[in-house]
Length: 552
Image 1 (cartoon, helix red, strand yellow):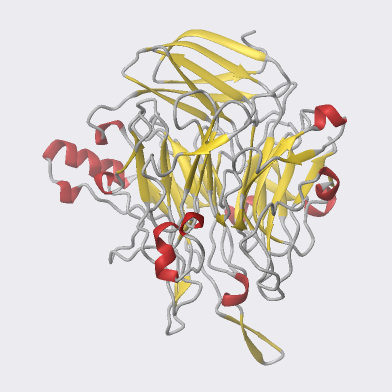
Image 2 (spheres, helix red, strand yellow; image 1 turned 90 degrees about the horizontal axis):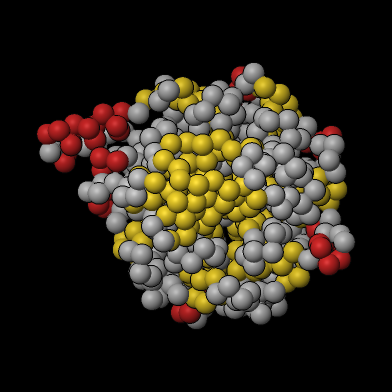
C-alpha cells in the first residue's frame, strides 16, 4: 500500500529548509512488465522489436464515486493491468477485485457510455480492445462483444470518447498504428453509440479512417501510424472536432460536419487550418495557452533528439509545435517564439496550471529504447511554466519533477495524466513508465510516478476553483462541455475531454487557477446540447458540482 509520503516530506522542507529532505518516494505499487520473447511449438520468437511492447498508459478515474481519483495503469502483454484505489492517500491495487485486470493495453479512457451516473472504462490494446461497464459497488463487466467495440485485430494506440452528433451518448474514436511485423496500415475507427450500449463502426463512412494528409515516407518506406487523438471544439460551433497526431505525417484536423449533412461526416481541413507541417508527431495537449479563450494544440515530435537517433528528415519536421488558434479556423505555430520547439523527443503531454496563476503550463515525457543499440534517453521529463506573455520556462528541476529512478536513470515515460489526486486544489501529474530491455536482454520494469503538487511548494500559490459536471440532455460525464471563467478582466477556457493525446486520460474534473483573486466574477458552462449555465460571484478554493440546466 502506498501513502502520500511526499506531502510529509515537503512539509518537513518548508519547516526546516532542508532541501535534501524534501524528496520522498513517488513510485506507485505497480510494475509495467514486458516479455522479450514467446515460445510456440518449442520455437522462441523475439517480439519486442516487432510490436513496440514497451508502451504504458495511464487514466485517472474515480471508479467508486468516493470523490478521490483512482489510477488505472496498462501493462505489457501477458501482465495484469492495475487499478490503484485511492483511499484517503493510500493506494492498493483493486484491478482483480474490480474485474479490470485483463493483461495488456496502451491507453485507458473514462466516460459514462450509458448515462447511468457510473463512469465506465475503455482499454485500448494491440489486439482486441476492451470496454468495461461500471456496475457499481466497485465492479465492472466486460461488455466488449455485446457493445461491438473490440476493433478486430487492430493495433490501437490511443482513443477518445466524444459525443460527435450531440445526441447525448458518447461515441468512440480509435487511433490505430501500423503493424510493424507485416507493415500493414490499420485504419482509424469511429464507433457511433446507438444509445443502447452498442456501437456501429462508421470510420470510413464518416471520413475519419485515414488521417494521412501529407507524408515524409516515400513509396515502399512503410506506413503512417496515428500516435495520439483528441476531440475538441476548435471553431466554437458547438460540435466536437477530431485531431490526430500522425507519425511521419501531420497533426491532422477533422472538422465535424454532421449538422450540414444530417449524419456523421467530417472534412479534413488540416492544410487549410495551417497544420500542414509534416513531422514525427507523437503526443497532443489541448488547451488555451495564450489566454484568448480559444483552444490551442501542443504536439510533440523528435525535437532535439533527432540527432541522437540519426533521423534523416528536415529540421523543421523534427520540432515540437505550439499551434495557436487564431479564431478564424486557422492556427499559427508559435513554438519557437514560445521556446518549446527544440527540446528532446516526447511521447505524452498534458496541459495544467501548475502554479494556479491563471496561465496554462505544459508537462511532457519521452525517451525510447525499442532498439537497445540506439537508445534515445535524453528526456528527464519537462515542465514548462507559462509566463503569460507567450514564453515558456523549463522548470522541472525547480520542483524536482525528473522522471528518473533511484539511480538517476531517465525512465521511459509514455502516458501522462493530470488531476487533483490528493484533493488540495492543485493538479498533480502521473507518469506511466514502460519496461524496457537492455542490450544484454535484461528487462527493466517500469514503475509509474506520482508527482504531487501543493500550495507550499510555490512562492506565491494561486487560488483555485474546481468543477464536477453532470449532464442531463448532454452525456452524463459532460464530455465536450466548454467552460469559460472570467476573473480580473481575463477569460479562461477549459474543455472536458476523455482521452487526451498519447496514452493518457486526465481527470474529468475541470480545474482553474485564479492567482490572487478571491472571487470569480463569472462562470459559463456551454454544454454539448446547447444549454448554457451561468454562475456569478463565486468564492475560490472550492469544488462545485453542477448539473446541466441548474443555473440557466
